[in-house]
Length: 354
Image (cartoon, rainbow, N blue to C red; front, side, top):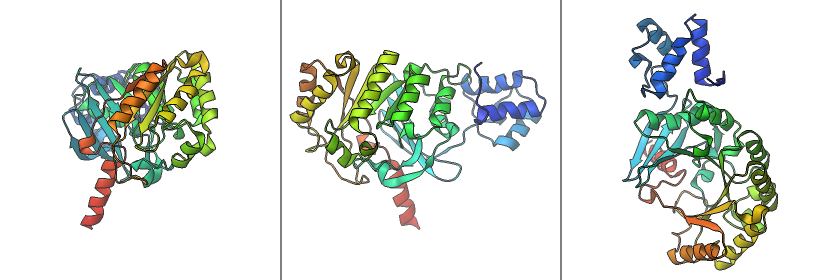
């Protein structure tokens, strides 16, 4: 078993058992109950003596989860959950099921966000706080305990993952063979381009997938709707990504949201080609994911739905130039599954009821 961080609940449970002079195998029994038998309540861990179960409940509460679902929206392929944190702040997570049966989960790293991307509903919330490693991983654990298969996990929910140092403890939990036991290659971390922590990912988590939110190949325009670009300019971020590829040999994913009339022209497509083709390994290890915009009235700026003709023309332009590119399957538009939308609906409803 890999070392378990003492600040996480798993570390605290282990320390509590030690303080109660319990044998080492008790911790293994608890972990087995959670991750093999999908038991989330201490009272239901029948392998433990009743007295110990009562002690665990008194110390940690009835449920292994530190977050509680307060609202769920479901469609045929998507389940979006709004969770309440212990301090009553709220976050979102989304489960997506592909037709082939593969299940992917999009989780949050922060409550809100302070990067102010103009197209994002989460940015309109502002940053409440960073999530702890337990609060991050509990989002996935909630779905797992509910019977879902954790085929892949993406840090693409609320917040900028690489602005929260707790994601590294979360990555350790996800990849610990005794806990979630996920391969790093089944985990994706998305970033708008926080260079210092991109470099930490390169050094310490080279097998975890990285996605860079580009959204415009033009530096000035990118700054206009993604202010973080002034702090970490596009050219410097791309150099850090080149270094990541050189060190790890791993592919970098480029997220490109199609904002109608803003960044969906063929001139933008040509500039994306120029940006990538001249990079390390001739751009062969960059893969562009074109994303249709999911309209949200909660974002600072309102955009309409992406133009399918322009989406297809953009795709064909990149593909014909030899750029690896896909148009990402769109999920959850019927249940407002864009980041921050469920949070915004809940807050408005609570406000109107007061």
